[in-house]
Image (cartoon, rainbow, N blue to C red; front, side):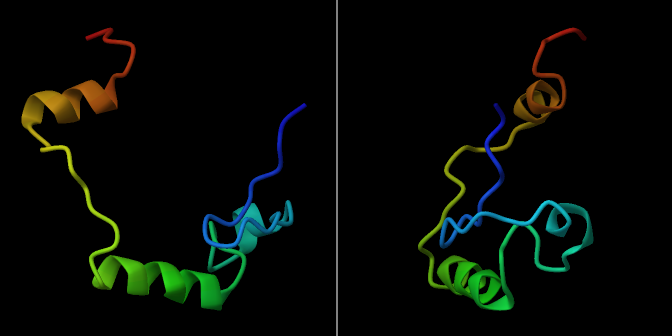
Length: 66
């Protein structure tokens, strides 16, 4: 059984229609979207891996098929 997607901020289960139609997806509301933006602005989130051309190619082709 596949688990329904949830909001990354409040863990509220998202409605199936919101996945394709919601302007705030993957969040459940504008409030959760703004909380996420505030966390980025305050430096609470960070991208810690250096993105090199080799790493980018690896992410584009996770199976390593070429």
